[in-house]
Image 1 (tube, rainbow, N blue to C red):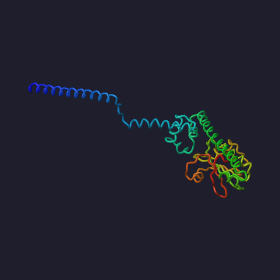
Image 2: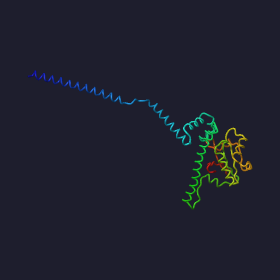
Image 3: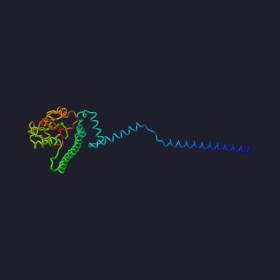
Image 4: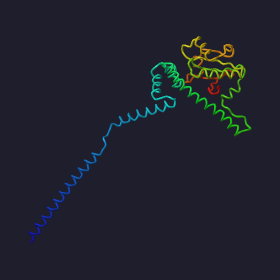
Length: 271
């Protein structure tokens, strides 16, 4: 009887041991399969620096494209403008000009120059139209809100209203400033309304000759009888540096000499 019980116990222990071995083996097989599955689905890790560089290039192109559209240019045209500013003397000569102006002045043919001149003309037309419209709407709004008060105008308007005999309008332009003639013609209309004013035109840039200035004046339609009487034509690079104080300033640049004090004003205020 004791021998029989001993054999049964031994058999049971052997069975339990085999069951544990079998379960352990199945666990190892399952773990191996699971591990293989997990690593098989794991994505390949790429260089994060390379990815960032690729993203940066993409963002840079998008940024440049947006800037180009703001100036009415294509991405290729804006990149050409940036190249001119960075890699040619144009970066020194025309650093204060709008992109379309730079491209026009560096154009390789009359047709190309006209193309960019039209882009710039549209941009300036939109800008000046908005400024003039705002000035009209501001006046109407002020009168509707405060009908018994005198409208408070901008500093430009106050200066124009206080002009006296002998005051000067200073106009700084380049020989090839796209809006130079347009601004000058509008100032001439102001001179007709205020004969006490004097217009001093200062030509900014290198290689500005007396012959070139005279040719510009004829093309702009300046009456010869007014030159040196109501209108003066001057080489003005040094004076321009003095009044702009070395800051980036876009041509045409306009100011009033009132009571021997020079005050810059916006171009739209003389249109």
